[in-house]
Length: 128
Image 1 (cartoon, rainbow, N blue to C red):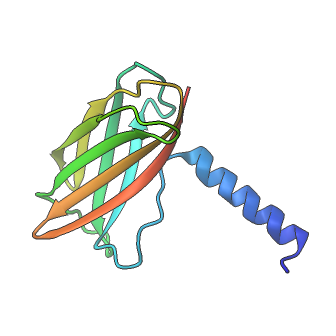
Image 2: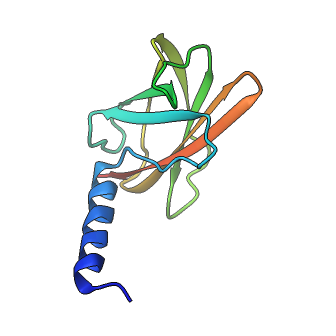
Image 3: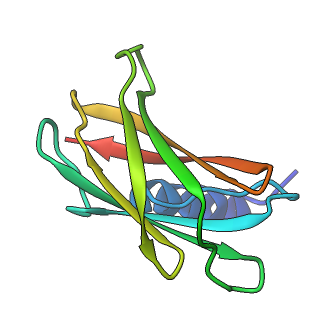
């Protein structure tokens, strides 16, 4: 059984990861590293949110020419489709704007497609 100190450390790390809101654990066989950020950093309801996604190879090289979509899904209820297309900005960066329609916990499901390969990762946000 883990020690109380290890349990506390694990809980603290999980809380920090949740607070950051922009990191996902990629699958072991994921072809790319995806990093999502937002402006504002802490999104709010019905205010435009800018999404910026960096797509890179495992070695850090930018991935260009991908088709990238982002689906905003509320974690606790079905809010209907809310898709954001992310346009290529160069250097492996993709960007687009969307709106969170309600306060609460949201999943941002990013899908990247290129050359017959696809990768989907979910990033979590707390929207106020």
